[in-house]
Image 1 (cartoon, rainbow over the protein chains, first blue to last red):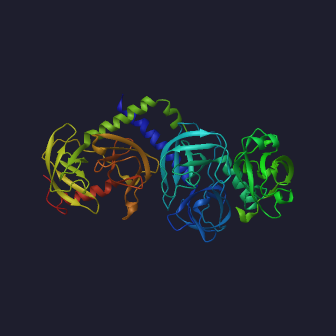
Image 2 (image 1 turned 60 degrees about the vertical axis):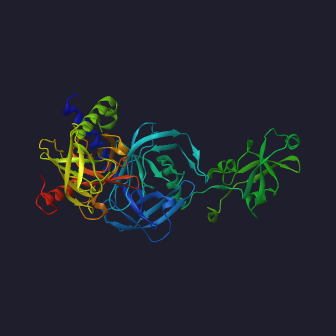
Image 3 (image 1 turned 120 degrees about the horizontal axis):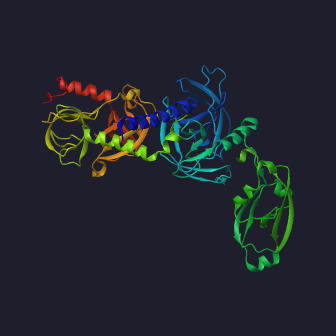
Length: 310
Length: 204
């Protein structure tokens, strides 16, 4: 193969990657909100920065270093542990407000070349890899809904959390975090970031439905299955009812075994969390429970999870 | 951007281009063995037998060198600086192919990098990565070239080059998963010091 054309090819690819870093990197900031090295954030809207919840270890005395090296104060708008996202507002006096990043909500493809950017200090840093797996909507261990599962095959270094996943054209496909899974880099897709950031900007928190119960799975013996009229092998036994909570007002008792919520069977405490999105607040749900060996139906009006519980 | 997506349809062309860079680096890379250690690497800096490696690779006054064409030489360590982790070796050979160089301070994050070395004893193994952070030109940890690339012991002293095969630094260590290289301008300064008598005996 002629040397000249090959040189040109690699150089072009190399330049494109550097240009993608440069384009997206202007919107990547350093977040000073913990004792160790700073973490990263992305300018989402004018004066608004999205970062990783777990990297913000204090609520006050926050500052942000911009692409031009200036450091400006910032305030915490809100945070959502369930999706590991937080929103900060730059002080109005920002001398050089960086431009918001260009986002894409296109589904990433397995094998696609991607860059993870960070700014754990003044300099922009990059790593290159590929999208290793893409899946459907999933729920984090803290009950947050992530629109799409995106796993990366690339090295993430200290301070990368909160930084963007960038495609080869410099568009931001999501926010990377090491806070949602052990030992692996995941991306919170741009659509989820938009949804959560919108709620944080509007209300300062992400509203979630709430019943006020704690449950644990329990095996249903055949006798109980027969008498309660269910063929499910597992139910959720109620081990706590918060006083004056929606469940308390709806008549749920400790010892009740939840069999179904709105006719959807329940076998894991997470099933209850999943059924209680913000859109259910104020609406009634039908709980089918086994109580004293017999099936009963209870109507409970979903409340909003109190903020202290988040 | 007309770039990456359309280019990647020609994966075989890309592979050819990478192979060419790896071959260019192979010709300017030597094996260095000193003081009974596992072999490290070195880079031919000047045609007249001047080779650069890490101080921690050239840990004895003399080192055995195997050039890309298979010749073995005994080299003298004519300059050594553990602080910069650099050493200059003098080899009695006068027609070695020297490395093309580029100034690492001009690199941008995301640019492609190719490393060549002998990781864990595998001779002339190539690795592909990108610039994680370019050196600032100031003293301190920011003065090193940080690369997002998979290296191993045996890469030490070997070249870290840009997409055109121009050496931007020599690999010195692995820290936090990152490849850390001494940038070219630091090496140029050191070689100059050694050859003008500042760092030890003159090179042959």
